[in-house]
Length: 352
Image 1: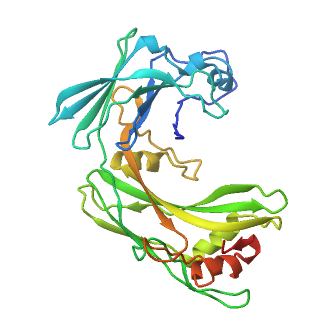
Image 2: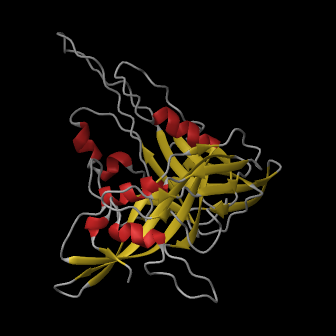
Image 3: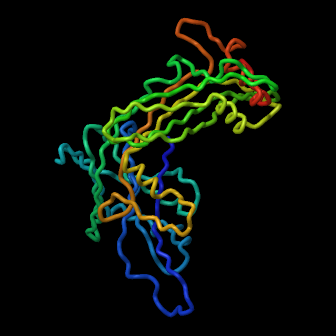
């Protein structure tokens, strides 16, 4: 499973002037940068721990040197305490590991170190992270609850498939589209909810006979809970017409392929209040003159230690039932709109 870890490296830059015969770098001060999101649905929890750097020369060259951003794992003690009513009832010792799949970029791909534990988390407990530099004695701490899994309570008509069209269009006439509503209930400490609709289809090259399974991600706007106490019923409407327009914008026209629709994977990604605040403050403002505050919940360090969770469920593109016949033919409006509708008729989709 792909993991995405965001590393914020804080580089101090000063204005320049005519006089240059002075030292611009202040004496070195240890700054630990921590990024970790606990997820109760994952079998492994990973924490990224790095150090900020400041030195004479090109910062890009520093970033390509793993020793500039990484601690020696032998110098760190990384622990998580499982708390109940503020009292530690279990200690989890995290060990260092390497991520081999980091893509090349501004920062070195060597020694991509994370600290991991395989202990199962308990959503009724709180977790305290403690990172100790054994050489300097510097200690960083942060505390977070763990989000419970949020599941959809209803998707559209709550059957085995999702309908986006009830009367197909033609190149010269408009269709009638269905706008399915998805519903869920919030959980304690959860603030932000975002749905992604992954549309799966197969693509057969008619010249080679090679068949590939492909998909398109249709990310919806985030929905915010009004409170973090949980139990709030939240809804989001999906645009049926918007779905076909989006598919047309994402799949290229190719006369050498035949495509067949398969299924949808609905994923709801849930973030804590801390994660929402962190992302909100660190998002681009579009105003170069706006000085944004540094948001961190790390005591004696910088970064974020918080929680998130994901839930996935599958729905079919054409109707079926456990005992009934498959309806992946011209009687299915979803498929007919995809095959011959005004937005997607050039994409080479067929019934089967």
